[in-house]
Length: 482
Image (cartoon, rainbow, N blue to C red):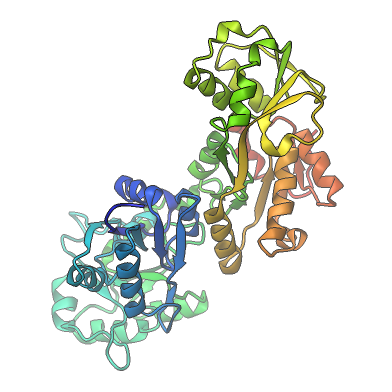
């Protein structure tokens, strides 16, 4: 908790989880309270500290979970309690994000705040559709306009003549409901009916859809393809560039929404870079125990053990850090080292230790997570306690409620057990959740454990290298690679 409360009003970007700014991500990671909107990609909640308080302020154009006045009050309340607060808003908070009202409420209460700009959807969604908003040959002026306002009927009250005759490229935000009215006003005020239009739904995400037309045909195109908000309507002949410049639709894994329990960073990056959206659910974080008395007393006897078994990669770094912290010289260790899995083996190799694999818990001392103590034969040093990362569970709930996911990857036996257990804790039947998903196992232990839980495995390939993972996701359903 900070000595005095502080509020960051942060733009989360247009949807792609990688399009939040460096500063936005930095403050999000250290937030103690996060108030977030519906249009914030739930996958960004993975970046939030495990102990942070999450408050959903979801808004639809016609209804609100929390009204703006209540959001203002919450910002003031949490800041006055000395908390570091992030108000996370889709796109840029200053572009139809009502940041001015929130900043004013904080200013009146004497609360310090900072506005962290974000990438606005009118520019980003257009770019992901292959449409630059300016071009020397097609358009040298660009403006953004709300597609609905606070008038009685919600139709924008603006200078339509100036807009139609003076601007080359126009981005309407959330204008699908009023699209017919917008087109009529533009044509009636001098914009040629043949002017090209693109409507981009869920821009920059795996759900992105784009329909094209002209001012006189776009309404029927939108109706035919059942396009709805959130959407950006781009008006201007610069839309013609989409045919030659589109790139996002060519991403190998576009549309793949992946659940990857405790996925490794390299594996996740490989999938995201190829267009997939990835949630590392469930994810666990470590509560470090190496400073507790029981651990320290055992550590003092470490030179008396003949063999040491590490059962988790996290335990390797925590153990060697504790040796340094408690001034224990590594040269006094006479033990032979063992590991239980490849990740732990890799962590030992990074420290120059070539260990042997062990399939039993019959060793002089076992070092691992506290939860693994049961069943061990020798002394046990618990380096950490595994806790569920609650913000990831919140993100999982939001994904399931909104659009679900279509792929789940199991990389180990423990990842299967973890998913089955945590899904139940979070109120879901795991078999029902994954019923319509492609299930991929990239490890023999994961495959055998999945079968034991009666999970239909669509693809199995043992020891899949990181670079092969994207292609594996494209393999046919029911294919088993042995």
